[in-house]
Length: 488
Image 1: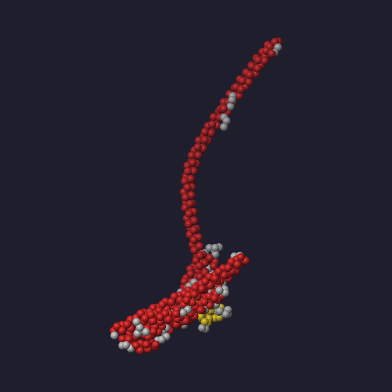
Image 2: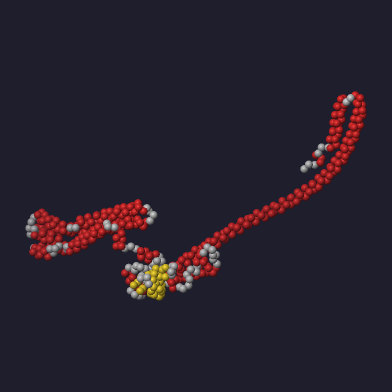
């Protein structure tokens, strides 16, 4: 702000101007002609006097105006000082009020933060509660829809569908309906009942039959002598008889339960999953044709191996003999020197290898010990080939079967790669034929080889046991004969 006392004095400026003009005139005065010098000096003196008077007058006016301005300025200054004092007082008061308001603002902000956090926690709790209610409503709704017993209920089964929707906020009535539905399903879980219900039988026709409901898990029907499981359709709210009947043992168990003769009954706790797996389960003889042409040689090997095993088992069983009992009787009769009875007893079992070996030993009982042992060893060697017949062939069949399975695997993979070359890998069904051939032949080859190898091993053990038994009884006979000789 510019105050008047800071401006230059107007009177002094005019005085300086007058002096300057005077000096200028005085300096220029020598140029004037001599005759006008005096007149000019008089005129200049008058002019200077007039200027001095004017200057003095203007100075007095300026001093008067300055005094008035100074008085106004002082009054204005006092007014400003009062205003400043009032403003400072108001400012102090406002600062105090501002501090109080700031303190209140901090308190209110803290309260707002706490309330906001509580509101968020409440919102989260409400969201979790609503989410739990919706999830529970979906679960209970699913239990109700999947329950086969709902075919007997005429009320709508999807009454909890609205509770599970995201757009619907569940109220207490919905929560009560949810709790009641859950309690009803819990009660149905332990119910076992028989009702007259309509099912779609295996021929595709509707039939009214006795249906056994085992809780919400399994439904069993009985049409005359036919007993089977039902599959529940959620969309159509109908029961369908499975296209495949359970095993005979399972059917008998179900029939006994329905007749009240048994307390146990098979049940599918997977709500139809195991029953559907039972329906789509492939039997071995249905998988065999998928193995291609290599399957038939493997089956021929299986038939040949089974025939050999049956023949060998029958051969060994028919030639089995209680050699200990026979040797005990020979020892008894030899002690009595009744060799004819010993020969007669051996000829009685002439179809048994052990008896033939003992008979050969009795025929050469007059020989020396070494000669007699050689004769018995020759008789044993004569009995070995019939007992080992076809065993090597059985081992060969067991070795060929997995090789044929491997051959089928290779041909199947070749077909698969050929299909991939022509059609790519976009459709897996095009490759399923070759893969099925590869896997089925391998499985069938191993299925044939494993039992044949096991049978060969067991038969070899049985033959070795018979050979060991013949050698043992031959040595026993030699000891009996020479013991009698020494006794004589």
